[in-house]
Amino acid sequence: MFKKIRYRLLLSCLAVFVSLLGIFAIAVRITFTRSLSKQITDKLTAIGQGAAVNVEFEKGHLTVESDFRPQDLVAHHQTLQWFDSQGNLITQQGKTVLNLPLLPNQMVQIQTGKVPIQAVTVPIIASDNGELVGYVRVSQSLEEFDETLEKLDWGLGGGIIITLVLSGISGILLTRQVMKPIEESFQRLKQFTADASHELRSPLMAIKINAELPLQYPEEIGPKDAEKFQAIASATNQMTRLTEDLLFLARTDQVPNGNLDILNLTSILENLVLLYKPQAEVKQINLISQLIENLYLIGDSVQLTRLFCNLIENALYYTPLGGIIEIKTTRVGSHIYVNVQDTGVGIAPDHIQKVFERFWRADQSRSYWSGGSGLGLAIAQAIAQNHGGLISVTSQLGVGSCFTVRLPAS
Image (cartoon, rainbow, N blue to C red):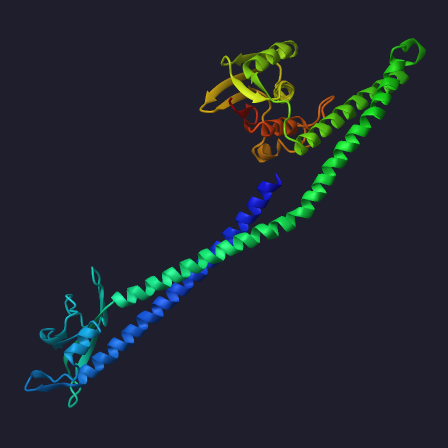
């Protein structure tokens, strides 16, 4: 149980940590990408403004006198293109050519493909009259930009993995330290429960014997005294059942099942159906079974018998006169499924998750009955888990409940 709690606590901490690291990494990448993209845009704009200054406009024609050396443009994977005011290409320098049409209203253009290219368009303004006479478009390959982002991604990913590994190791150590005093306290509580339950059995037995003894001679005691002794005996029986259940749960939590044998679950269920048939007939309940033959598993026959006794008794108690209780077995893969279905009062949806809690009861429909300890379903779940299985429940108010036991087959 505590291992599961430790794992859940560790996984929860790691999930929160991963979320924070992920948010941090995304924020860093977005910020860095925008900053690097702005730097490229500013650089291309500056180159374009410099190229626009070297353009002369005479007699309606543009004359380009570029100070940029073509080899420098090629080395930096850049290209300069000059256009007239109508968007017609006049000349260009460089090999990284943008194939997109000129869009004067769009300053930045990005061409995707095998080699992504970013371009910046700068208008050319005549110095004498301030008229628009043409455009300069500067383009640059984004391969270096992508390589830089790839390095950033590897750095962030590697940093996150290393951080998670170190956090996982430290988290394991911390969760052990945190859970250790809790485990010790829980173990002491279980030991106290087991010891107290064990020590209570003798005085309760003495009370029961002394309370039942006068009832054997009713002529020597009056009717009122007989009722008192009967009440004492009934209360003692209930307390005895409670202490036995608490002792069983404490021992089940502390040690694994030791009396393991290869069992025929079908035989156990058939015997239980025969055992509870008379009680069902008294309540006019139709107890039926659909059992597959020879369902073998490895387990403790006493504990498994008690598991299904608790489920059948629970169904008998909450099923009204004329109801139906059906016990059905199926096998799916390596697991055996046993359904104990009734047409009883049902369980409210809000209470479904609480039915296996110790001492749980909901108002009137799930209260203790005579001799009950309120631990029957908790004990059944503990036995199922002790055998590597689980009990689940589905229910509907006024329709009935179905308890499904899943156990590993041999």
